[in-house]
Amino acid sequence: MEASTSTTLVVVGDETTSAIHALEGFANVQAASLSDASDAEVARWSAVSAAPYVVHDHDPLAHVAAAWVEFFDDLSTYGVLELEIARALEAAGRHELDVPDYYVVIHPEHLQVTWKHWWLGVLASASPSRVIPWPAADESLAQLLRRLPAARAWPDVDAWLPTVASAVPDRIGLG
Image (cartoon, rainbow, N blue to C red; front, side):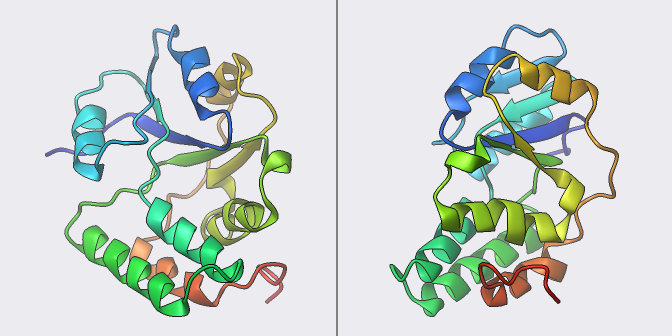
């Protein structure tokens, strides 16, 4: 299946449904809640879109993110984190995992601390301009679409995802 030519945004945070609904009425946006969809279903949905912007809440790295957060919150083991990273790398190698063009983190100040470190530290360290904190889950997201930062594309997943296991909260980006 061909890759989407649209700019894809994944909305994350506590108010993703509100954020997606706020964008549904715009002609240049195809928005839907796809949190329970498979990666393949999301890829098919995105590929057929003619809209310039595709917005949804399906994070292809959700399992890695959850494993990282649970490891540092002492709820899981390092082995689980390594397993989720390996699975994501395998999926990327089969072209079954596509990182969106942008992640929009709604109300990051309300996130649990370790999740803040994931979104604004670990993930943002791979491509800083591609992870955008946003203060509201409303029509203001349309303003964001009009002024998305120009940035280099995400590096290949296999270039940065293996380093996630060694990214320690409060130490990310310190060298």
